[in-house]
Image (cartoon, rainbow over all chains, first blue to last red; front, side, top):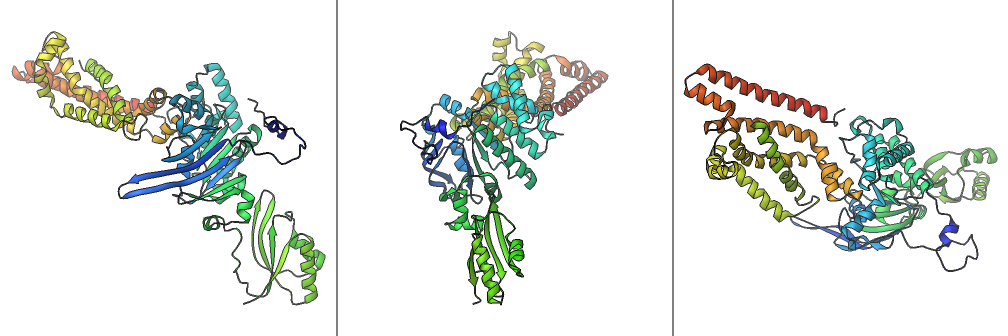
Length: 361
Length: 201
């Protein structure tokens, strides 16, 4: 299977206006997935639960879009509305411009075949081998056995499980099961992959490898990935855009970088807590060094010591790395010698870091 | 007698069991009213003790099978009594299948038929086989009862030739054979279930 990853030139081919500057910012194209005013209300004994409240968002082709929120925030309901496993009570969901809520059962089935989905509990057929599990979508699409088997082999190679073709799911580890699920989801050549807490049942290392696989799939096959999670680490590792849900409401949305750096909502801060609150008071006069992604990830402190001959006493440091950029804050003890302090501040400023003095209250 | 009754009970009961399951509220062919009505009918049929059903069905049996008594004819009332039981057993087995698996099948664009025949039933096979073993032993017990009302078979042998003729050796030996048959069905059922079930490592 060779999927052509669209280049900027291809995208431009869809528009009527002439291409003046190939380096111009990409003109927004129609979103692959568009959610308008989506609401879902459950009736339970005792009243109603507003699982989703007027959600509006768009996902572009090729995005790795993360939806994060605490348990019960409505993320699972949202992603299940995308392929109509759940039906919203209000609002519309457009997949490639077509409203899935207005589709006939036949159209819906065809649309679903273009969307793969993987689940937290894997949902493999336990009475069938790995190979037959992966073959299922091909069977229901009427693909003849020989071609189907060939494709199954290809898919198992993509996820690295060729030798497990005759094994049964109960003989596999969690990570292997999820890989089979991914192979199965890719079988129908989908344009997008929906991941419903796909790594929440896996240990951190396995989570890492599954996320890397998803990233690889997105990069080499151009498949859009929509994933929901309650773990910030997952968003940090592979997503380029993120939406934060809190009690059914969309409280924040944007690129991962901007949402991390300038978290506006309370829910966001609760989830990320990346930049410590300004009111952390150090035990002695200090200098606060702010890393806002502009400086490269270099050994700043050791170079500071070598270049300025200063003794650097680190009081606290809270650093994160996002897409090869470093974000965070560090507090170092402010030297008593004014000259030394000036040297440190100048050097750091030269390196592109913001430095400020922190006084004791 | 038992085997044929079993076969026909399943022919009737299995589809009913499937219907009972898939028309439940959040299942693939949700139709709660239909489900409730069907369930009520099944419950009603199940609540009629076999002996009474047997007697009630005499005229029907005669019409359908040509005679009200005899080994062949007894199959009709046996099936009539057993199929609601089968329906409930099948429903129970199908309920055991993880809903998540059905949803995954839906998310891949399966039709309802594909879900029933390629996912729901195959995933429930070990449980269905187990259920079948239980059903067969029940039908076997029914045949013994039916024998008292004129059916043939081991039960008839035990009761007419043995008990009623005061030949107790016949009674006991026929009974022992019956017990052995039940054990055989039970054990082979369990063994078959274990072999078919790939859920264990």
